Image 1 (cartoon, helix red, strand yellow):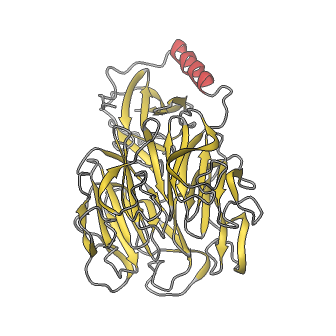
Image 2 (cartoon, rainbow, N blue to C red; image 1 turned 180 degrees about the vertical axis):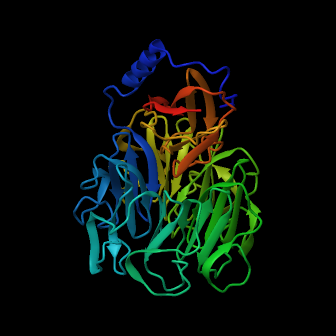
Image 3 (spheres, rainbow, N blue to C red; image 1 turned 180 degrees about the horizontal axis):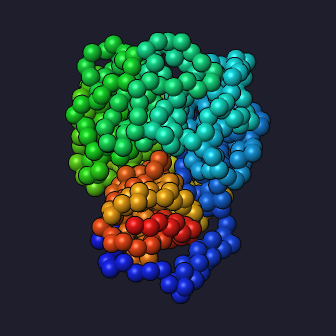
Length: 484
């Protein structure tokens, strides 16, 4: 959506307009079935976030569905204790985590042999199938789920990590491990965090990237294969608004819609001609602009995907299980290639170890290997995207949460990102302007969105924010007042 000048002439909020905003909010939040608004893929399992704030998972990895049992399921099941109140879900190869809306606390489930669930315990005999609360953590804005370590970015711009730390996955300068969150030193202004198999990266409000951990294939963005014990600046990439990482490779999305990747590239997962490694950030072939979203990639995947502004999904890398969505073609691709057979435009995509899923207007579609991880109630091999059972319908974004703007003549409007929102509308005293999630710096539905508005004159103002996606408008937020 085009950016518009934020405020024309300041207009005091009238009673009539206030009633109109309330009516719009009531209409938008009326009775509606819970629809999928985000999807995240692990290794042979997937999870979706619904518009009711619930988490539903399906697949063939015991203990990873979060429903309190070791049973697997070829259709979505509710995660125990997470049927509402969740703002985001993140899946890894062996464990998963969800952020709660109320205060940014985190619950995790699955493998816990090295304390990666963060509750101060270990479970070496079996995964923990019921979500447990991460000890002492609040204000989380995003979660990085590695193979056996976990990190969280917080609303104050810092990062905490826990779990395995044998290759400096914490970035603390040592390999001391903790079953509860510990601070990553020297990090400020962090917007989001993501993890590969044994490395971690964060992007900042300045749109720069810092990485640490294992660097055996150049996944930290430099050629020396030694690990980085502390945060390390990644050169050759800037204006970063979102990131993703697979087993040994890393990708970043810039504000210009460009995708840059680096690291292991034996299967073409960097998006260029295959090579053992590509340690320098390199533009994925054909993706120098026009991308609106990167795939959430599980930390054992050797493939990548992106969503274009047109709603087309392109994938590249390893394709041994047809996880690139190319029908009967199971050859690896070093050039991002369009997924075949998606019914309509996609707004998000996720890449698991053996399958992938996309969020489309009609629900969630998955493709690739199928022992039940495609979620359609069967284990039959299917070469094209299929709808996930019970996750249908068109859902607009959820209710946004504004944060009071900086009270200056050019106020900064700040709000929490909404999973599934591709655009936002800001209403200031009756004047409405539209911005893409990329313009607001919160592509991917994580972290804080921020827009600096046009200069205002002295007066009293009330502002509202609303999310939007291909499914329609979400509800307007409550009004936030400020005076100049």
